[in-house]
Length: 413
Image (tube, rainbow, N blue to C red; front, side, top):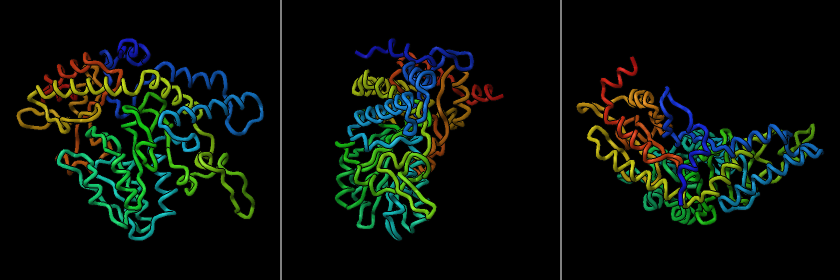
């Protein structure tokens, strides 16, 4: 049984207001609210076990070391890998840059190819652009199907002997589609390339097993799954991590160095975690994952599907709305509002919704290449999480019915 009322009591932000109205937070694709257990885990580090890790020989430092390693083991269990394959990062962006520069520069040469799609977030496009500039490799785009999905068939058509890296989103942050990563991985490996997966929008919502998916790398962020900001995970198959260069150099990631410039780095994952990490954020991520596991990822996915289906069905009843992804796999719905045949400016609509307590994002959502497919460079995005309710969806629908050019302008001025 999914006890939504009990779950909502775990999130103190849900007791807050937005512009004086009860908070209805529907911007979970950007970041999520934090349960009490995550806040407590962060506070516990600061109040009870503050110490740096991997440096001290006193008992307090030992406690911090143990807590940090336990967090790595919790992540490994969550995505089904070895703990030595879990690298803590500052988020998905950091992880993708580490792969691009740590693996890509060593393994790509002139005229090699990197495959991505126009549906990718900036974090899964810009590092590959830079890598291509540095190595002489080329970035090519796998076509989306008519709905905007990444299909196995289109991936296969784009593969050739020059392709060395394929980097794709598991869950689109604009269209909410889930890609068949397992089948794509098989095709990519048959072609002799590696598969990098951006799991920022999938890992928080669906059960993720990297062994089953057989991806070579997977990256995701803590703050999109109830955890703190500035912490994320880069999973990599260990034989690939062993061959990667660290993006950052500094304390904690080396065995020794000398005045002649000789350096000996530690093994993975330590070699990729230079400097003092966000220890409290890592411990908060551990608490967030355990919280999700306690509820059950299958239960979360099922509840979110029901909520998403309800939201889409209610939106379809409105005659002033354009839905760009009427069949999303996860709770991301991108839309615009029209008035007398005119599409209203998304930021004006978002400001109008905010006056009613509703928090939704507007814009291109960092997927600036996707407008070619959508036919618009800006949408309003409703992104759901497991603490949202049908009652909140009903309020959204009620307010959307009243969104007109005049009502939105009145809010601005």
